[in-house]
Length: 105
Image (tube, rainbow, N blue to C red):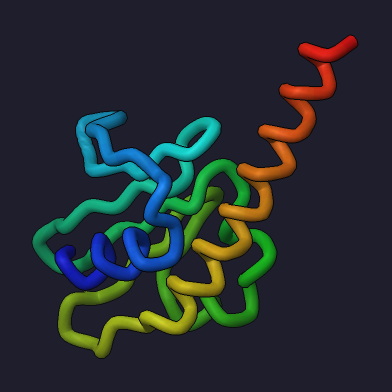
């Protein structure tokens, strides 16, 4: 969990941390990513569609819409997590630009 938190913080220091849906969440123009530890896996939630772009890389893990489950007994795929975070940052920044454009009109 600390490794995920550190990775997110390094990639997007301007994000704020909060608890959302009763799990740790990073927030940047909306929920950026959620993550949580469970008995046998770590859940990583690149909401709303951060897993779709990485279906091939996630195929060896249990996953679903907006969810990736990484088994505790396997090495944590930090490179994949970093890619997913970067994609979510880009989506968040696009959202911010749209919001500013709407406010301007």
